[in-house]
Image (cartoon, rainbow, N blue to C red; front, side):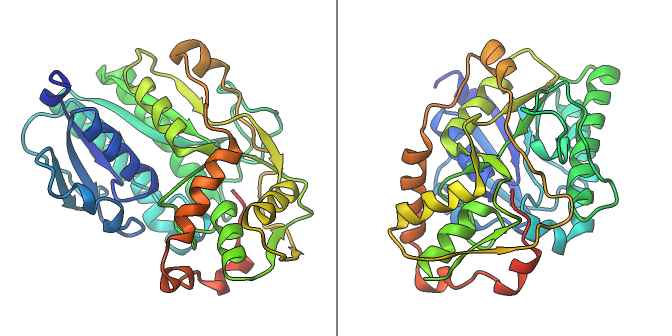
Length: 333
């Protein structure tokens, strides 16, 4: 803790779901945290409990514009980006800019400060995969001009420029490919399947499945994910590493789990599968196990209960904030 107190970390996208949990972790570990977010999808509520902490400072800033941070920086974690289908379908240009201009600014700052950079990539770089499970050597099956392309290609470019700075400028870089993650502070209206199902159950609505429900996802609890990210940051490995839970489940079975968890009697209704929606998603975490001695610890049953209790604690106004008109454009992730 005393050693960490001398270290300073910049976290972009700090008011988002993952960014806010990273802020908590680094503050808890004794670091000084510089949090940055333009609040386009993040919420101050996620980090307001840290505002009185002397080791925490917040800047309302768009990282797609020039970044200035006075004083030393030891680490930069670039987590700024719309990450849900509803968000990046609404703001496609901003999504592309934060994955290109945003990372360029972060890498330039890292070069100036001599800081190590860790970027949040995603399992979406694999697209609709033809390899199962997905390992880091798979190059992906991505449609660059489809509706998901703005997010998928932004993340793929982000990986490419990060490796270019590593190879050409000698910057210390780390790349985490994040698979489906869940936990407290997710937004009910963000378009992802877990909060969508729970929100529908809490409001007494039928659960909506897009496609026939045979497509699969693998859900990792946020606490496990954060641990994997921290271990990767402190490793000496520069190539991408999958962090996720390989416990795969079909969307149909997952809907039944949510109905059982919420003790509701909702029906399941089916709609057409959106364009380019991945049919299978399961991480191969062999590399993370070997290099980081990491694997998820929290079971889906345990993590879902914690997450459900969080959503139940929301106000009625927050529960009704889901934008129903967007469900027809829903893309399961």
